[in-house]
Structures are given as structure tokens and as C-alpha cells.
Image 1 (tube, rainbow, N blue to C red):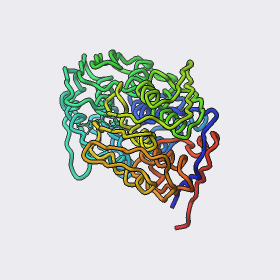
Image 2: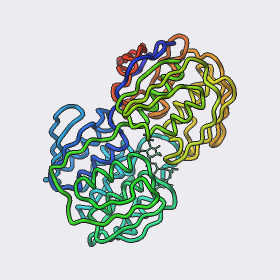
Image 3: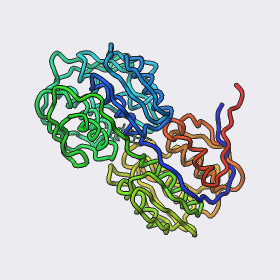
Length: 422
Ligand code: EPZ
């Protein structure tokens, strides 16, 4: 069993470099399948979700040549199959992008129903709706999703019922090589959605409107090979370090981030009393007092990201008064609050709302990472707690954060990685 032992309390200071965005990279890797040739990718995060995705690509016939752990050439000339292994695709959510990308090149596609973090119901009805509107036949049976098309997919007007990152990206992937023009309304505007569109446009796709509510995609015959693309920095990793800097009353420079993407998080930190100064691709975050209470309501971008909700909760736990969280994206994202209660936090969560009565200290305790971002929150809680915090189920954290313990330790934390016997 693996765990992190976080020795607290500490004050973070120094500089941290942010890695490439997980949620952009897990979409760009399947997007490479639309190219009958090679793509060169840089700033790909070295995390377990990416390693798992590369295994899926290899199982389909991709050849991966590493230039470094974050840079690679993916050659998709010899993709022989669009039947992805159940074992490989059932482990994580982003395997659903294989539906849109493989349908661009193949008539029959099969993946497992996507897995991923347990955040409550995670339907894929909007993904299926998009593919069916474009002319595919989609069936969900025996834990698998089967998609087939008799002819090339054909562009039509589409209106998404909910603002969905995954369905928007799947639509972009499916429409890139389709016949004609697709107009999609009510789409997601997250930075990773824009990054996927930029990647495909850099190879000759015709995707307009990424970052707005309406996308216009004009299908092209094929994409150019031998392109080179650098994945954007991870908004959520940067936000995680920003919150950690504030709650430890630290002084941290966040390097290699895009301050514009951080605005919903920056605004809340300033409201809580932190000093946040942007300069080019860096953000300097410092704090010298107890945070003020704040209310957080999660929303699609440019609203406050749900993937920062558990980390921001640590700030609210330590605030000088009562705070509130309203979770508007996922139905079950408060499981981690029971773990924080073990450390002394005073949180009452019901339905999609949590009320947090601020306290001035947390105490180390064994805690579990219920999902990726909850795990990051457990580490942040451990950094401020008196004593040591054993963080279990860290495989969730390692799915999405590159070298997280080393990065915190370089800022003055004391986090040990321990692998216990069977
Ligand atoms: C993406 O998930 C992210 N994952 C999640 O990050 C993130 O929490 C989420 O977007 C919201 O920002 C990846 O990018 C790989 P959605 P996704 O489709 O695409 C409903 C992390 O920690 N919905 O935008 O699966 C859904 O139930 C992960 O990095 C439908 O009803 O999320 C939810 O309420 C966890 N039908 C809302 O839309 C559908 O077909 C938004 O979900 C699809 C979604």
C-alpha cells in the first residue's frame, strides 16, 4: 500500500513550476488519432492517467517515441483497430474521447463505459446525442459503448442540454473530419477545450469559436502530419499550489501558468485576504494572516472550477468565520469532508451545500483520498496540521499531479512517500 506522510505544520516559500494540463493532454492524445502520421507533443504531464492513455494508443497500433518524460512523438500511421481493450479504457473517464476521434477514421468503434473519479452520476448521454446527430449509431451494452457509422459523419446543428467539457471535446473530435459544417451551441469554454481546438487547428482543422458558447466546425478531408504542439499549463495544479501557499501563510511564485485561466481562483484568494500579483506567466501568492471566510459556488468556466472545490475548502476550514460551498457540477463531491472532520474541521454538508465554521488549527490524522482533487486537499490539510497526516489511496492523486511530493518539498514541506509491504 502506498501513502504520503505529511509532517506539519509548515510555511511554503519558493518557486514551483506547473506541469502540462492533465485535462488537455488526455484529450489531445486521442485527438492525435485523427492524423494519419506523426505528431510531436511537448509539456505532456508525466502522470498515471497519461501513461495509461499512452498504453491505450499503443494497443491500437500507435508508436510512441519519447524525447523526454514530457515530450514525445506519436506515430499513428499504423492504427489497425478501433476496438479498445476493456481493461485499459474502463479505468478512467477520458477514454470516452476515443469515440469521437476513432469515428473520424473508422466505421466501428468499441470502448468500455468510462470509469474515473467517483463524483456521483456521470452520464454520457450528451456524448451519445452528439454522435447520433452526426449520423452514428451508438449502443451501450454489457459495460461497453459501441459506435458505428455507415458513411462519413455529417455536420448538423447541435444544441447541448448541459454545458459538458467531455461532450464538447468529443463533438470537436467527431466533427473535425466530418462532411460539412457543424454548429454546436451551449458548449463548454474551459481552457482545455480551447487547447484541443488549437491543437487540431494547428494541423489544419477548421474550428472556430473555441472559448465562446458556440462552435463552428467545418470538416476537412485530412490533417497535416509532423506538427508540433505544446500543451497548456494545468490550471488546477496551479490553483492547488496557490491555495496551499495561502493556507500555510507562505510566499510562493507559481511559474509557467496562464494567469487569465486562474482568475476565478485568484479572485477568491484576494477576497480571503491574500496578495496575488501576476507577471507574465508567473503568479506571486503570499499571505500573512488567517483567511477571511468566503462563499464558493462552482460553475463551468469562467466560473469557479469544481476541481478546486476540495482544495479551497481547506482555506474555508481555517477562515475566521463561517464559509459556504455550493457545488453545482457534481452531485457527490463532499465525501472528503468526513476526512477533514477527523482532523478537527467543522463542516456540515447536505445535498449540494456545505457550511464550514472556521477553526484556527487542524490536527494530523490518517485520511483517505476519495478522488484526485480530494487527495490534493488532504495533502494541503496535512501541510497546515499539527503533527503528521497519513494520506492513503494516493493512486488517485498520482493520476493527476506530477511529482507532487517533490514539488511541495522544494517549497519547504516535509512529505514522505511510503510503500508498505503487501
Ligand atoms: C471534466 O469531466 C473533467 N475531466 C473533470 O475533472 C471536471 O470535474 C469536469 O469536466 C467539470 O469541469 C476531464 O476533463 C477528463 P462534464 P467531464 O461533462 O467532461 C453533466 C479532474 O479532477 N453531464 O463537463 O466528465 C455531468 O453529470 C476531473 O480532473 C451530463 O449530464 O465533466 C455534470 O453534472 C474530475 N451528460 C456536468 O454535465 C453528459 O453526457 C459537467 O460534466 C455529460 C455530462
